[in-house]
Length: 383
Ligand code: GLA
Image (cartoon, rainbow, N blue to C red; front, side, top):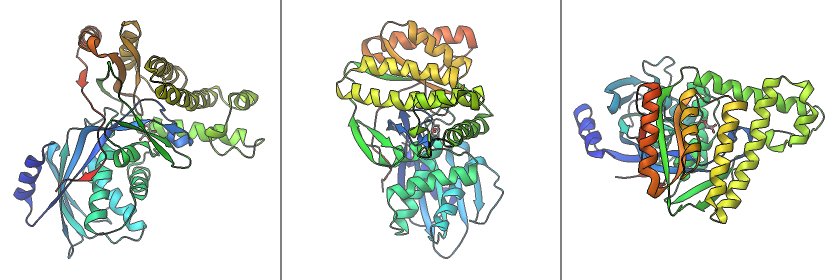
């Protein structure tokens, strides 16, 4: 956290008193692309955050925002349609969605920055949405629940950024807790906090530094394929509202009625919803070996059936598969680049990182960036 730096920049740009808020990025152990299919997810908030220094200007409607890490500044109002910078859309989206809920958001000055890497699959965008939502909620006494704030963040992605994401990232950022994973049922929004203390094992994130320019449009296409599969199956099974309600047998019954692509997407999701339940059972028994095996299976599904991986990610997972001491590994988040998440015996972590980095550099010309994360608490006010 670099609050001192952010407050310094705030004072250089603006006047008046200020409050400080912080919201984390997330990891996800298993349950990828299941949230928008009404399945389960198993994320945890991490000790990497986006922090916000903010002052409300009740007699103005102008929002002045500084992205400290990018050295960019933009002024806009809630009615702005074209923004100069991409990050502005996230703030504008939150303000717009809050307005839709009947909250009248005045102008404000803010500076934000942090250490959630951008484009690495750790949800820096959800962290930004969550921190802005939480700050406005508290400072303007909007009395919205954290559920509502998560929804506001998700809808800003849909309506202002153009990504039809699920609710996992915003939920994890707002509801996360130290040492605990959030098992979220994305249909009912009921959740359970699951203690995660993998004694003897470490979570290793290896960032390929690849970011695919088509990630958003491909993401939306995946969602559309899932919806198409559901609509085909629902012609016979009226009770089917999402892939959560679909069994493998049902899917097989309609194999000739859908494109092979739609079939593959649905097959992955139905399998992943099941894998998550198995992983949660295994976690209760402290059986990390089974969790790891399921992570490898998830990667295979994301690579072959859902097709959201890339050569760099596949290469890292392949190394993990051959490394004695790496018990699970897979692409994390939306895909098309970003990080792998691996479960590695702590005493072999160093060797794993060294070997992966060396072989990755030989093949791709650069080393993957290693991110050390701990499962930490969710969004909060700091000052
Ligand atoms: C992105 C989205 C989430 C989720 C993941 C994939 O992070 O924002 O809603 O769908 O991809 O699991």
